[in-house]
Length: 261
Length: 340
Image (cartoon, rainbow over all chains, first blue to last red):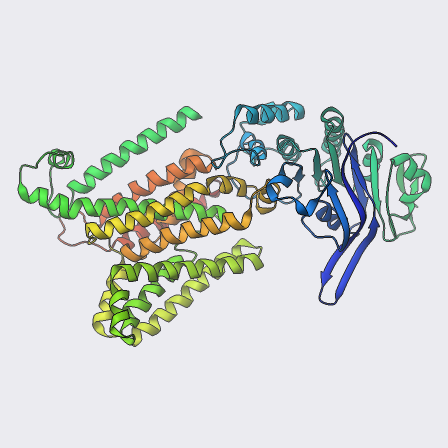
């Protein structure tokens, strides 16, 4: 398809939970590839297993079978520190209360590279400033992180991940709780970052219509299948009609959005 | 911002020096500041009794106060970040009660053991050991519980329950012990920083410095933990290791101090908040030194109040820290915003 370098791939991956009663498989035989410079979105209904998939490809959760390969090495062979230099995360969880400024928060992204006291070198400062410039948040850096809006905080968290300087960034529902304007600006920022920094950016979302317009590739999770392809191909295949169980929600391929009949 | 910090730090250091001198000069026998200055910096005071009082009573007490203030405050700072809870502290989470249980076990229970053991246990080493083990056990239990409970509020409640549980066991011990043992324990539990020999102080100093050293090692992990454990892990932090270091540091600090000075309330809870309020930051490198200085100043100050000039008795230090600390904490909570 293209000659881009593959950052992360899965082979015959089965995801799910192990329990005493036996394995509960959520999805199996997943062969996904994440290439550099691509913006990839992960969509699927609530409870379909998006989080489990993200937890498995980030190495937090062990797969039931199959492997996740990051930069040609099994993700479970990485030490926490090595992994932090290859993969950064933006999570949905609320930050604990603190007096961290925006600059300090972004600077924490350099933790995998700093010494035992966390002293920032000139190289670290350069990477931090790059992240700030790329995300256009120069005006925020001296504010406390609890003083800025949710939309701004989301962008600051993306800047933190950028400062971590990893080839792969994974975001868990970065646009939830945001209004349309901020949703669009986060999506456009991610698009720009994937193009300008050549990083691979994977994110899960419920804003399917926006994801269709802006992602390079999409992974669509339904109960029976997990498909990875370019959005236009997925539309042609009619995948989006199978996304929700309710037959009154249909996908209008021409308009590129969902219709309730 | 940098300038502001330098100014606050210098004023705090000056304040520390001032309270130190004031602390030494005040007491049942008032010694003029000039004389304090002279005998501290190599000279001789004009009255031999003054010099004797300073070297054998005032100075050891002041140093103990500084060690206690520093140690408890730092352990509070570590716990507040580790538990992501502004109300965490060695006293609230039951560490001090754990120490009390250990000491009660030794002082009140030593009679049941063969003489060889009881002699060792009742020595200052034995009491420190018992106190450290007591606080370590409570901290470990809280940690185990905190891994099952994500909600920090419940962890705090569990800590309080541990407190009541250990005090109940101490009551059972006291019921079966002699009046002499009981008196010894009661005096210990009221807290005192006044009667430590130079030898005891050096043991305490070593323990506190070990604790401070390990706290220094955990400054970077603590900064990382400000974003929560999941982010910390994604930034390469070995959470388990960091947690063990922090726990070891807090229990050696809280344990050794409680062993020598008795359970002293509120310092560990209130001082880190004063530091955060004063410096308006969460950066642990700044907070570490801020907490250190403020802790020392406050403890010296509480000690001065406990033996106000003009009175020929000394109030228990534990009462003073609570009388000062409780309103401070209430004020902090009412001002909610600053309790971050």
